Figure 1 (cartoon, rainbow, N blue to C red):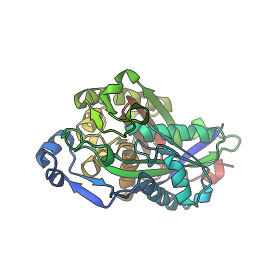
Figure 2: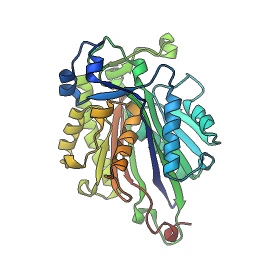
Figure 3: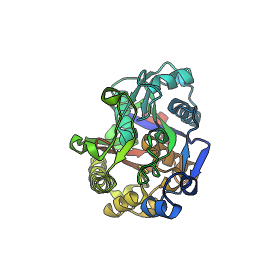
Figure 4: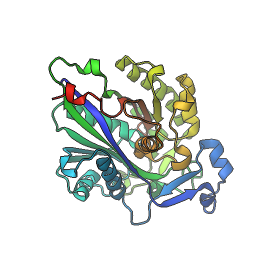
Length: 338
């Protein structure tokens, strides 16, 4: 398994319906000032009535494929992280595969807001163990469809969207070692604590009551655990790469709440100018938030080929995790790879 798993493409999609805090205040007991003070959120996007999670995921995937100059038939594996699938079954990933006219192995995973980091880790392991050479990792959620508009503390936080990245495996030539080259997905860590299940959940489920339910969250408790667990997880993940926090070009956290992002940044003693935050414009888009934020950083030319990126996310379960990625392709790729 002397190979590199490179992140070579990115794409994202936001629904056209952009909703301001003022718009929400027309039917939720809230205000722009109240929302911004507690979360930093100004806007979010909501899907139209007939727009599906698979629709958003497909559009983000097509943009990622275009970024990498790949055809859908080049993709061997599609892993979609979502909490809001189109159907109970089959997987939403299988619908994305159909929409793309691909033949890839396709399946969903569910780790709520940590879903993208989970999917990235699974995809990396599968590629390294010969399940193909190219993978589409997608995070997509229609969170607006599981909100309780009577819950003013939770309903104002979430939005809809999708983001996708391309992973490509390259086998190294004899004489080159993956531990020395340090490109691509360098380290992942995943964690779960089911004893904290009731801090963030929905009150519905197929086997529970045959409904999708609505989000219920103990915000203060989630905040406390998020700051502690994300900081610890990220530092341990970074340590495995032999890089230090000072080597990191950009931190791209899950966009849950600006106060959480600020608290974790301070706890890591990291430069806030090197944190990519889109929470004010997107809200919390669950599994889509990290690739959405990353795509913004690519488009505005902050993130460049060879930059060292850090991802971190926490979601219901509680589930959380971190990833360290050196983005793009090394200039000497043809020299070092088969």
